[in-house]
Every structure is written in structure tokens, then in C-alpha cells.
Length: 386
Ligand SMILES: *[C@@H]1O[C@H](CO)[C@@H](O)[C@H](O)[C@H]1NC(C)=O
Ligand SMILES: *[C@@H]1O[C@H](CO)[C@@H](O)[C@H](O)[C@H]1NC(C)=O
Ligand SMILES: *[C@@H]1O[C@H](CO)[C@@H](O)[C@H](O)[C@H]1NC(C)=O
Image 1 (cartoon, rainbow, N blue to C red):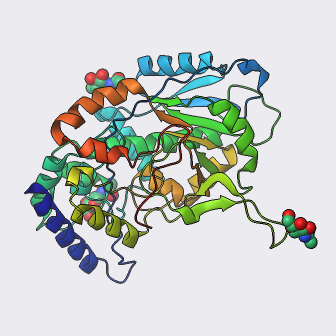
Image 2: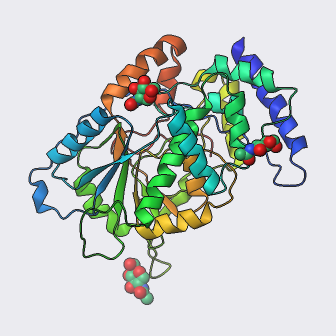
Image 3: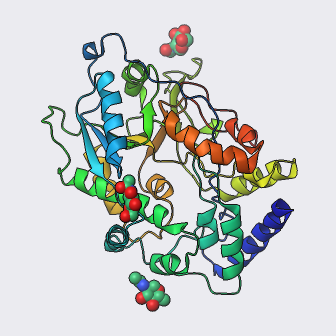
């Protein structure tokens, strides 16, 4: 019952959104329901035999963290893998009013809090998920009806004011945390180590993420094949992907077949029609709402390589952009690529913890979604929609 009502609510709201958007891009781009329960086994990363024998492909690891204990765990795991240049970059704790205000102030400073992207609304943010975090359908439903006859919120403060289900603060805090990290990286404040390379890669990881087995050997071998214009390379993504985004090695002559590199070009993350098609397709084929893998393309900020020059570009490009999920803003503001076979994954402890809730409330949903979340070193599940 709930899934049908939700489907029509969605269609109705999209129709309303279309009327609202006076001549700007009025495509049905509005679906950004990041959904993935996550049941897979996450294997523990093993240290390569002689880690110190391999040169590090990046200068340092920056762990974005609000929880000291989780940071310590990350640091210990990285140390096991021979990586000692690790530092903690504090995120914003969305449950503390003072930190939430700071986060909002930072977004405001960059002009990102003054308007909202048309994929952002209170009910949409309640459907916000990532692997291991099921969406809150009850909250979304409630927010939807509470706001149905009201004008849409116009800025992030209004979004926060109207939030009755605690769906908004986390999204704001995560966006601001990455923004602050870019700012400090651009200003040279995070670098603790002298490196010879002029504009080296830094590995940014969220505190509940682990690297995959053999990541180091793979990174060593594969990173040199990354496109020269890469400004950000994600080690992990979820949501949809397109085969046509595979990056090919340029060929010298036409009779030589092009070889595919390990990378996908993460562009057009919100190409709307595709998303809508994907959602409707799965839905109409009997999946429940909770299993519909309605996500943007190449979603997530769990782990990515970034250079100080990329951070400076991001800071310039994001100015004045309407507020939306930071992964989407990031993709729309610099050249992003992703490893097709992921090199990082959510830490098992978190997965188990969150999964209990997910399995209870969504039953078989978790199984369906597993098929759509990339797993360590594996080809991502084929996206059946294109
Ligand atoms: C975030 O703040 C809340 C409220 O003060 C607190 O209960 C919680 O432990 C904090 N989380 C972390 C990870 O420090
Ligand atoms: C948000 O929008 C409301 C209504 O237009 C306005 O009163 C308020 O000042 C705005 N807040 C910010 C921080 O821009
Ligand atoms: C083009 O590639 C083919 C296959 O690798 C090779 O045999 C041929 O010599 C190449 N031709 C030129 C003009 O480079």
C-alpha cells in the first residue's frame, strides 16, 4: 500500500516541481533518492607482504571524522597496511547546535545556503540513504504532506526550520565538512609532511570506511592510467553507472582496438530521465520502494583522491551553487572519475549495525539492493537500465 501511494506522491510532486521551475531546466531531474541497503560481507583488508616496498601513490590520508574512536580504528588499520601519514580532519557533529550553525555559516560564506537545488526538499532528504542506511519512508511521507500546500523552502535555514524528522542536519553537516576540508587543503593547512611532488594526491576517507584487499597493488598499477585531467578520483561509489562512461586508452591507429582503463568518467550525475526511468522500471517490476535503487550516478564521498589544485578549483566552482548533496555538487564542479571496481568499502561493524535495522524493516529489500552496491575489487553489478 505504502509503495503505491509513494509512487503517486512522487509523480505528483514532480509534476508540481515542473510547474515551479519557470523556464529553467525543467527536466524530471528531481529524483535523488539515495537508497541502498547493504548486506554484503566486507572482507578485512590484508596488509601487503612488504608494504614499505611500495611507494605511496598519495602524500597523506585525511580521515574526516566526528568520532575519535572510529578515527583511531582507521588509523590503526592504515598503519597495518604500511600507511603512517594519517591525520584527522574534524567534521561537524550534526547533533550539536553550535556545530550545525558553524556548518551553515560556512555554506553561507560560499553562497551555497541561499538557494536550493530543485532535487532538494524536506521529504527528499528523508529518503536520503547510503549503503547500510535505509531511507525513512514514514518521515518522508509525513514531510511530504506537511509541505504539500506550502511554498517550497527557499534556503538551507528554511529547510532546517521545517525539518521535523531530523533528516536535514546530517546532510548539511557532511556538505560543510567536505567543504572545510577542501578549504584547509587549498590553504596548505592540512599538510603535515614535506613532499617533493608539487601538487600530490591526498586520500580523503570518511571515518567508517576501509580500503579493500590489494588496494595498494591495484592503486600502484592503475593510477598511472588515470586520465590526465582527473581532479578527483573516487575509490568508492554507489548508485547507477553507465558503461558508456568507461575511459578508454587513446589508440594510435584505427585498426587497434581501444582498451578500457579501470576508470569511469563520473559525469551527468543527475541525468534525470534515466533516473526516473530506472525508478519506474524497478518499481513496476515488483520491487518494493525500499529496494528501488533510486540513486544518483556515482554517488558517495566515502573515499577519494584529491589534489590541492583540485580543492582550489572546487572552492571557486561551487560559489553560489544551490544547495544539494555534496557528492553531486562535487561532480558538477570538477573532473571526477571513479574506479569501476571499487577500492574501498564501508567498515563491517557499521554495516552489521545498520543492517539489523534494515533487514527488520525492509525484509527482502536488502537482498535486491545488494545486487546494486559495488563490492571490493569486483565489477559493479550491471546496471540493467541502459
Ligand atoms: C554528537 O553530539 C551529540 C550531542 O551533543 C553527542 O551525544 C554525540 O556523542 C556526539 N557524537 C560524537 C561522535 O561525538
Ligand atoms: C531564507 O529565506 C527567508 C525567506 O525568503 C528569508 O527571510 C531568510 O532571511 C533567508 N535566510 C537566509 C540565511 O538567507
Ligand atoms: C596499427 O595497429 C596495428 C595493430 O596493433 C598494427 O599492426 C599496425 O602496424 C598499426 N599501424 C600503424 C600505421 O601504426
